[in-house]
Length: 100
Image (cartoon, rainbow, N blue to C red; front, side, top):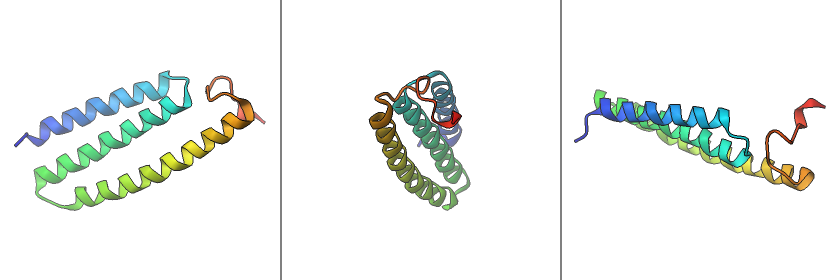
């Protein structure tokens, strides 16, 4: 079995990659994918903590986080579809919806 500290380190690396991608990318779909990467890194750390402590609480948090992430993706894609139909782009630099 893999040591949970290695799994937690992988979760930290994935979190940093997702954070870097969310702050540096301009395409809304890629930013949404980076946010999902961040959420999955947190889920990985929950599971690593649950495995290390022998507790099922981390697994329960992970199941709820996956359900919330699925709803977040559905809402995000609906917003991007509306943004594309109104502005014909999903570039975050070109769309300034919140300035009005």
